[in-house]
Image: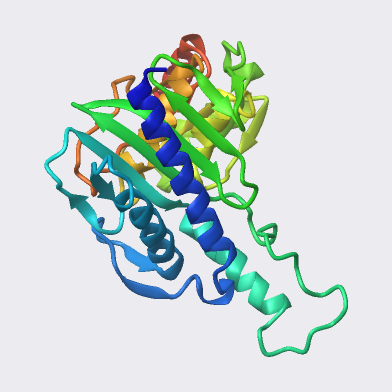
Length: 300
């Protein structure tokens, strides 16, 4: 890893730690409240704003001073060749159900009972699968990526040409080359066309997972936790695809581990600053598995 990319990655890891602390220390019963509208045209929840503020403060305090593209505030141009592509919370729905359930089992107004309070740093309630994602782009190329599972703290990192690490341990993809042996994470089909496209995967894959957090799904492929991610909604109804903030960091994490990422036609994913663009993603542990998946979602 070159020295400059090493500095960038250290900053990104620090940002992920600050965001996790901000989420841990938040009043989780209020995290689902809408506090505005994001640059992507969707509602901004309190947890989105809280996490974004923590990340932006971290980036602003560092002398690297890159531009920022974030799901909530959009593009902040600082005239730099370096741009950070930020998703403060990937899968807000998973994050906010945690807060809603916490309030229902332990409301703030209820008297404390022995053994009732959760540990201070616990997010293991509801659906504990949501992430902080941050990528660094220089002159149109992703040079570093960081995805942190906020409930567990697990940290996926990669730098261009330096491989992928999970909790600072080198990882790589599994040598899975066919659908029949693959554990496949899916984006839920939207409508009859999406269901038709995914039908072979549902029948043929060894295991199916539907988690709702594409950044973590792609990162898990890098560490052999699953073997593929498929969004079958190539007809692109509203909200059916992934944004650049969802996949920019995870894409590098997977490719550095030996995997491949594309759209559902096999084309490279766009890496521009259009925060509203939606692209159905297909990611796989091996090129052979990618080919099998592309074939399976294009029925005759």
